[in-house]
Length: 346
Image (cartoon, rainbow, N blue to C red):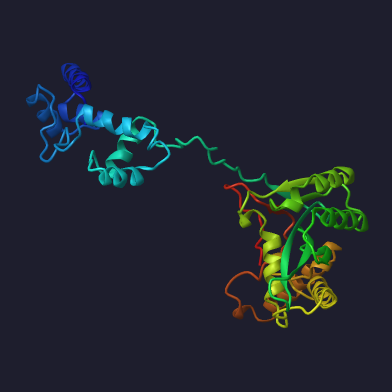
């Protein structure tokens, strides 16, 4: 609704344009006002909105005193740690009714009190970790720990698994009987030294072994830059989560392991298959080892030539271009919302 002051300014402008020789309909059209609206404004000098159904004040609105009583109850020591949907029933048990829960919420929102009112620590806002861009092997790694079920109820083994985000290759792993920051530090040191990967950026979740003082000191000694997911947000570490799913859904994965040695043997076979035989959908169906060694360039070029030759022999069988065998050069871990560079984690 246009207020009376603005209406007068608009009408005066139209009148001035008419006196200068313009037609009323043209003057109204320039400012986006219909002739009918202009006539209605002229006939309504008071400036009130006379459209049917318009309500300026709710008939059931609480009085100022009642609104103040709602606020007083919410800041009272007895109720300050309770939400409105707890306060209203508590008042009803004492034979009191001031307003509904929705009214409580509406009043608190209006006075900016609809937030943490307890003496306890407020919930902490966690920001998404910064994006990590990999353009080659041993630039960005991801790691995590997963449980391996044993034949003894309640007893688990722990698989520490490190992978290269760019190539998807498993660069290090270990099966242990405990989940420990000391063990994790030893494994990451051994993995980095074995792969000559000092300076790699290492992403993990927010678990204790990942953020322990022992681990952070080891990473600093290795020159490794750590990166962490938000607490309880698995999407921040998608590559490791996807790898664990591939491991546990692989045909032949046992329901339980009878010993650590059995688990090590099975994981060893899986790693060999995954790195050397598994054609990964996220890297154009080449094996992680071939991509890590950058042999995928020649392989993808061969595929491209084969497809082009097939199309040349029978062009009538192709409705468009050949399959895209372009190599994904960049992989982004935790990309920003406006970017789409991250390859699929299948």
